Amino acid sequence: MLVKNPKFEISAVSPKQYPKNNLPEIVLVGKSNVGKSSFINTMINRKNLARTSSEPGKTRQINFYNIDDLFYFVDLPGYGFSKMSKKEQEQVGKFIEEYLFNRKQISLIIFLIDIRHSPTENDRLMYNYIISSKLPFIILANKADKIAITKVDNTVKALQKELNPIGDIPTFPFSSERKIYKEEIWKYIDEMRQ
Image 1 (cartoon, one colour):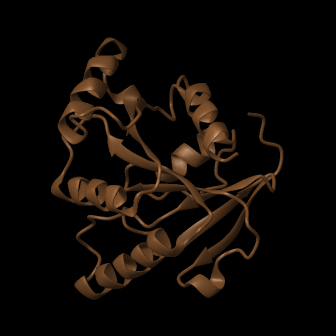
Image 2 (tube, helix red, strand yellow):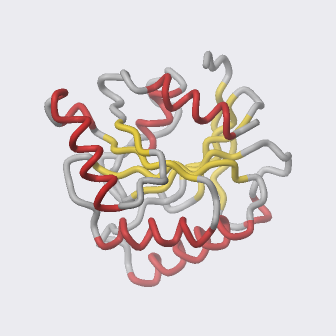
Image 3 (cartoon, one colour):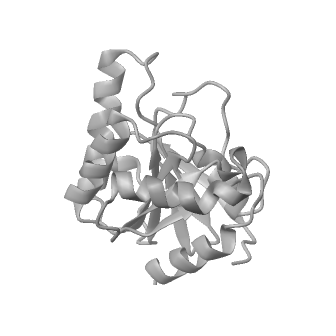
């Protein structure tokens, strides 16, 4: 997909701030520093529309990126970052839950996991949480450039086996550096947002 005019629209912490149009929303979830912002920038061929941070846990709001008035990429705050106070974690958890369980425009959830590590306890909690939302989702094994290209397929299979043993959730490798898995993901996004 050729993206011409993507723009950051709003950072929201409550439903009254969400965009009022009915565009489909493609939602990104994953732990802090898993590369959600880099994923957005790579998909739309921009260097820094979505701000990447060297400080994990910095995103505390839900960020809406309008992609050519066709759909939104929605970046949820990362989880599992210990520097956030317990109270902050609870607040963030509440508005993520409110968004995921009440927002009617969600077309697809993209669940990002670091390809180099086994899923953490928080990853497993999020996985179960997404399943309980009954929304369609895919798993992205991100940072595929950090391992040998010959090991990518087997690592993705092992990750899927660990997280989704029945294998019914599509699981793809992804790399913002190599940009070689973009087309597959775009095809999937295009199908789901129709």
